[in-house]
Image (tube, rainbow, N blue to C red; front, side):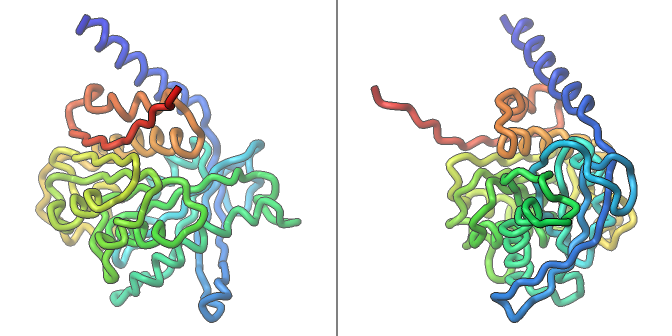
Length: 303
């Protein structure tokens, strides 16, 4: 029975990976700026990556319709640090919108959260805008995701967004105002990825209390054993100065875990893919580098 179960787990995982690899798109890119009229016409600069017919700037969007993800960067980081995530998610059919505000040394976390929420709530309007690159290429399903400061701001954003379907935090950091406090009002599905050897945002003070305070009916906490804070991003960013002597899980291994989990997560909550839910629930059995806590309320219909 155990042997059969393991074979089933491996088959499920193999089918998931094979299915995602078959849906490869080229990566297009365009810069965009959105204006929030409710905050004195605040300008929100974004870098948008999308499934395209050819790699490059302003190339045509690939045939089909796609969900979108608003992403918040880490402290003094920008979108270029997350090229690995861009390549993995866009190639699989997701539009990635990197919100590039609050990139300085004195960021306003509240504004950053509101910027993420605004993009999540309004980007879908591009679908019906004549002449827009994305006209007729978007579905009305979206997520907010972020790393470190942007991870904490993701919870601030989810506290105010009217459109977000799910969220994801990569080493989410406590913010001012408090992401931990905001989490008590966040009810959409949420996943937290936490490196046990994170030397920048201690899991016990940041990732864990954000997860525990989240009011979602379904939430996941993934402890990446010996994972780092900066391993989600490409090497070479200022983040690396916080972990100069890190000697845990390799960046390549951490990013592979991150990509597989995010693809499964967004496939479930932005595409309603039941098979990917099996991947999420069985992921710890597929490799030895994660320990996952799953808290999901299962509703039972009364006959």
